[in-house]
Image (cartoon, rainbow over all chains, first blue to last red; front, side, top):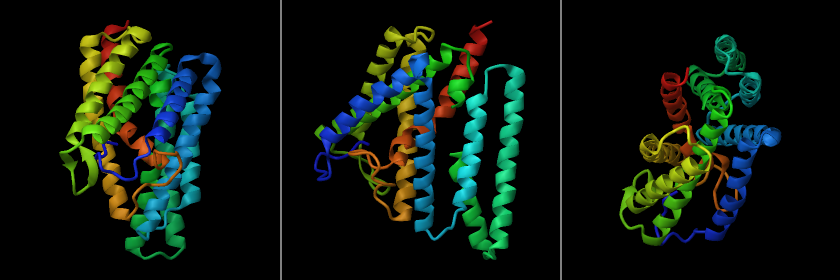
Length: 136
Length: 149
């Protein structure tokens, strides 16, 4: 976003084409009820690729995020949101379930890192990266 | 996702459409204005490509698209609230963008990945949404909770 005019890597047509195609599809998947499954697929894809890229960045800093646990936690949160409704009683239950998933992810990630024999500094950094990826 | 399920239909669909329209539109507006007339760097140590002219272009695009959203589908929120909200969302989007840039820079990566042509990776697309999702959720929660029965 917001690049300088002299940036040699500018690819304006790519950006226009992607925006012109992607944005209307995204808006249609939200506004047209029959296209809701498409929105779910797009949201899931965004979550998967976003998490994957975050873990790639973490690995470049020599952290070892628990990728399987991260994707499992992300999938659990996604499933909760998929079945969530605006009903206040249901929302309270959903919130408790989300907290439970985050607690489970934190404990599970720490136990797995400990069992792998990681030194304390690596253990904390890698577990933190795993959990932060899911939360963001 | 919380925006999608946190409110009754059609409000949730309108909020989410407004969210994507404004943020993706401001992102594109900022990109092209920055490309065309960008001179003054915004945060040279974090992201040398970002300019103040791009910020201005992003805010203008966000305001225009917020007005489009109001007249197209989102009449529940008056323009006197929608336009300032769109401007604040753009600024939050830039903060998210800078945060992700700092993250990439510290990891020694230019783009998080090359997933989307001309856009970099998925994180490069999601960064401006990151800080805005809670902003819009809580704004809508307080605004519509007060006004709806």
